Length: 444
Image (cartoon, rainbow, N blue to C red):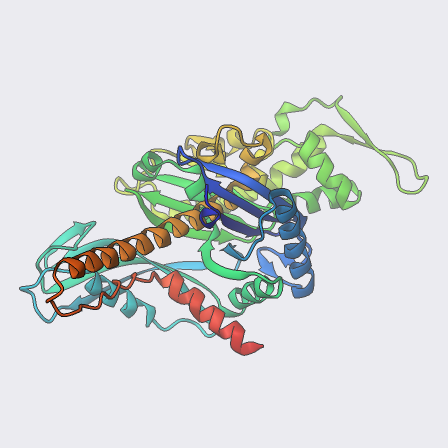
């Protein structure tokens, strides 16, 4: 397979930074050819808090991925999350000049551009404008209005908003690490692409991605993204609670959580005890697993209740908003024992753990199918799709030019016609990424 079909996903998380290099095999599955991982030191709750440390962590992850794969990384697809992300719903319309002509891409683009002019709070910027249903004249609930006649085109939009400074800080870190930013994607959307099936998105599903610093939520219904939210709690607050509650160091608390932790206190008996070595000659500490589970349960319950409040705000109890496919849990925090049962108990909805292995090639390393790599796999998929689209556009242009040259050879009497490739319609993210690149170039 050619090198130009290789893409790189860069997941800048609160706990770890992952660089994943991959390509599609002949069956359309993703073959990961290199992965690099580094401890994330300069990111707090999904937001860059120390530029220098974040750059070092990115370089470390990228260097490791390059040495494993033997491929030089140039540009990456980066995920964005963090407590500064919020979403809102907005309806807008345009009145078309000529109702006798059918609705085209340009009309939808005009409508989307109009939404981009919305006045945001100071320091905020629109990241994503996602059309949901359209309305043409008085006909409602239209999914695809292109090709229809109508004078007034109206739509409901899901608008994702973020802090300008946070977005630019991520861009600065990536650029300073010697990489180009090919695309920015909202992390819950990347995770959803990696672990959700199209059937689940159609039926209605809530994806809960429990990371180290944040818990991301993405709700889909009828195949369309309906609601997104970022809750500023994750696995790290559980570790902090264990550290405080048991008076131990962070490293020990993390190990206790992953090895012996459970979200359901009733599972452990009072006689189950774990001994932790004391610091510098001090006596070892004995902690009952029941107490450990109680500490974890209290914090996990709080996180789930926050997420469930967001699901209620979306309106999952209405007939129209019913989430038939229930909840899918992913991210590193979803690996906590008995978490699925607790989620089902609190929400009353079916739940499953989401693994990204469905899209990975059969001979992939088993570690890659862990929920903690869901975002990185989703970002890699996004990058590969972009590469394929670019390649298809180039092939189309080349075919058009060669056809034109053949016609000229046959009919020399015809005047020369210059073939201009049809410009590829840029998505907002493409425009946003270009704007961010220009800003970073000028800032130097």
